[in-house]
Length: 144
Image 1 (cartoon, rainbow, N blue to C red):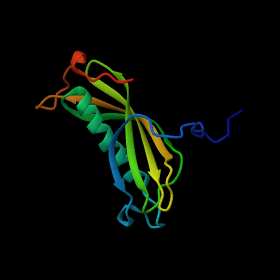
Image 2 (image 1 turned 180 degrees about the horizontal axis):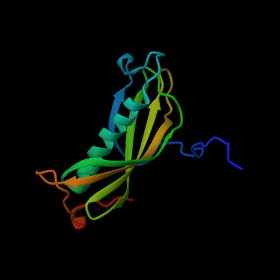
Image 3 (image 1 turned 180 degrees about the vertical axis):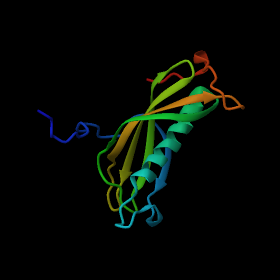
């Protein structure tokens, strides 16, 4: 017997963003597909940019994205939505940083934020030659 039930993200109980604000941008018509919907890839790239900022700050070095996991596309993003990406530290490894990212929007003519996407991104600290380098944990910022 096979399971034919669709897999969905667990319902969100969050009512406000968690973590540090890393990036804020406006969803524009150029970011849409042929149906006028914002591309999921555009949103993913905004999250990766914000996560990269957070990871580099945490590692105190250049970082590169090595994995994206547990992505949950919960709600659509529309043209004119103000998109904010928030990051919180999941773990620091020897050379890697895993960050939980949340994308929230404020829709036109509304005042409250809506969680649209979240997931975990892993970044590796690299040196000037592009080789992995050890993250000095005593220099990493402490997060809750």
